[in-house]
Length: 309
Image 1 (cartoon, rainbow, N blue to C red):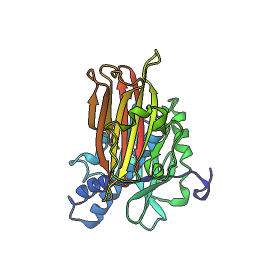
Image 2 (cartoon, one colour; image 1 turned 90 degrees about the vertical axis):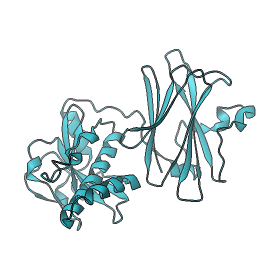
Image 3 (tube, rainbow, N blue to C red; image 1 turned 135 degrees about the vertical axis):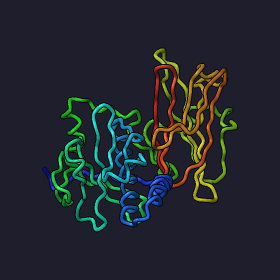
Image 4 (cartoon, rainbow, N blue to C red; image 1 turned 30 degrees about the vertical axis):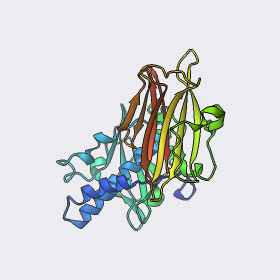
């Protein structure tokens, strides 16, 4: 296989919330070495979990042993359960960057091992390598293989890796630079000139931007419009509004159509449901580095879009 200098890696943002959770667990330990280890383990778990989400691999991050207050002091591992298959081990790269420490307790019951390197400020993580098996505690960084081998590992289980519901993470900072993904169109393409002054528009800065996406929610061709707008505030936060409306002006949304805002762990933080209404809207603020998802559901239809700033 190709050496580390010529293989696929993957960089993900680490949010303030990620670091806050890691810091909360770190402060439970008086031993500085153990505290630092826990901090890095939690962030490695978040980084690998986000990668799996982007690749359409279903995980159960909340079932990791790292969250068990009784087991955490006794184990040196950071397991990420993969639904129906087993566990991946999330392995922080040493602070000097030349090796990865892999606990012997994980050598026999893992789907594989993912090496994770952090930026100096822990606001970013890079998945730098994968191994199917490990038989030594200290694995040199050059002994790790391309992340492509991780996907090959799932194919080897005869289990099809699920396609992500959203093809990739949409980076909203690019929207502020007028760079948009295919399928997200100018608002004028979906709304008539008369309706452009709708109350959902929340212009707070001359850098505000809105884009719309048409969603086919039923087998008979019924469609709705998903609008996402954002505007920088005077602080580091970004105001975001998510709006659903029927394609035809004045028409009610399908009964029980639901829109939800999820955090990076797929927990629902906001939701709204159509009950004879023409529109649904959710407003919130995010900080640079944060990730959120918008999920639209109706009966057996589900669509998810993942966004990051």
